[in-house]
Image (tube, rainbow, N blue to C red; front, side):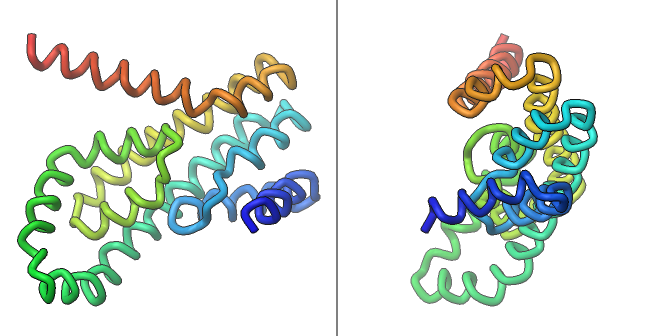
Length: 192
């Protein structure tokens, strides 16, 4: 089933409605859809390199809006469904501890999830469920998603089709290394 969903998403990239499909997939991926928008963004930029940054902007904007929808899912549906279940099983206090820890590092958590292969939708929903500050969530989302999609578009713009294989095979690893270096650098500064 996942393979059919992937193939269907790839077919959208070559159609005349590709920008609308990119926006829709980018929005949906941030709140519930399992396929990342990169699989549309990459072939679209390769096909029309002059539109690379317009596609990255569209992808970023719709992803952040989808993230806001995920935040709303966590904020509104979590209270009605999950809190009574947590209370029934005696885990509501543990969730409150989780909530405090999540909100203390929420901006970093959102940023890291936004640039790495970690499912961003999980963090958008958790952000709403824990009551992470919406402005903090939005700023971290814009920075993270913008970095991710503009990096992909920029590499494709500069290097064209040969970079496609590199991006598809190693993008997650490269962003993970970048984030580890970034977080490690801030931790080093904090403790020195």
